[in-house]
Length: 312
Length: 315
Image 1 (spheres, chains in turn orange, yellow):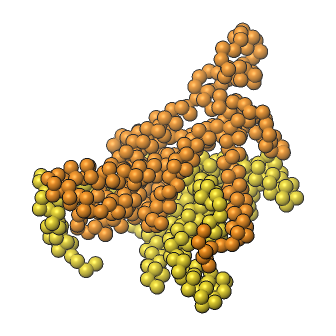
Image 2 (image 1 turned 90 degrees about the vertical axis):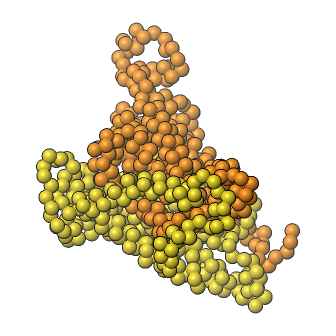
Image 3 (image 1 turned 120 degrees about the horizontal axis):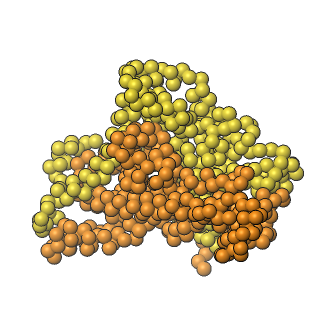
């Protein structure tokens, strides 16, 4: 180890590490609590004092995916033995499953709209960023600033005319409408991030390719795209996370067919109040993919959240 | 800007690159590549914005599409700026903005400073700390209402346990005095890592040689902190504040799920207030004027701030 006057002493490191560890534990508690609550029974979830040790149950997950109705003892008797494990969980509470819940649909909507808008915004963002990076586009700085400024608008402020416009065009509550909307919102991020990534690729590679007889297009997709692959992938994950988490537009512009999971999860209600294990189960399934992505992205996180302004 | 657009257009393609190109010219490709992005943004951002401005001069109501909308001039603007309720909303927003930024800067910078001591496992803990920031504010905000429940809520239990008060004796989201702090706490929990990451980048950008030089000059650690660390991190910190400021001025999802603006209108931030006017009271013209005022405010404040930021960077 090299000696340096700026290297913190072992004691300083220990002290800093201990404080950060305490913060990390506190900050992770609410998330751990969401995951744990998903595996509790409704009575365990609202127990006092809060239960840290409990017998895991899948009732929350069963309730999340089904709609149930209370049945009389007589009806239950006539039904005979429960057919499946989830049937038996529901029967214990004197209920029968009458059908699937809407969670599956809402989750699927999130996947369709998330991936659709991510694909579009990364596709459009890549070609626009390439043009901004390599060509002298007239008014380049103004256009780049214009693209960024679209992000400053409060979603509710533009929601009124978008609502009116979509109603005219028949795009209200449709997948296409939401995909276009999220694409437009994400373009600022994808253009700015990708321009940064493409700027870092030496222009000599393309020039060499052009001299070898490639056309511009060929040079773009055979030389630049592979070089920018990491940047494109991390941009895509950022766009996906944004579309996945978006709530304001979703709650205002969708109600049925195209509603995504975020407006839906808070509306999960059980008998006599919110069914917290089911809400927590829904939240867990919805949040865990993002947690995994965040861990994968950790090297590019800073760049993504600052629109490429800070690159490290 | 010194170069005129026409002059720029004239020099669109560098000769060395253009020579070997077959097919489309570079200028055509540039336009082809940029146009879809610009068109989509015009259609989904600028056109609605213009429409909002137009609506803001009328008394149009979305829920009465058959009634003819009248041009009312600046009356909507006049009404908003003289309405006492709007100032209550603005105060709630200011309280939220001020305290979230202060807390996030203090905690975020401290964490970054500690993590920069490069203890073992610092990368792992950084990743753990960052998690809340990436999650859906609406879904997480909704779950926080559970943590904030009197008695059964984990938050109330922990606070009760540590302070010796009765966990069922207070309700973070039900009490007028506590609700503004309830939203500040959750926002700080969620977004402190954002400020932390940016500060960390700032701290890591300081060359070690500066500290070594200061050490040779016998500058105390305290002095080094205030004359080297803080000034060098300041541009980064200001950038973080800009991002948080804009985001929290627009704040909607997290707070709507947490408190819904209540109790009363103690946590009714501007976006929530605007949503009520536009989508519950259906006063479209009025709400449009409101939206225009908000947008001009954000844009104006952000521009002034960016100028200040550039001055700090130049130093």
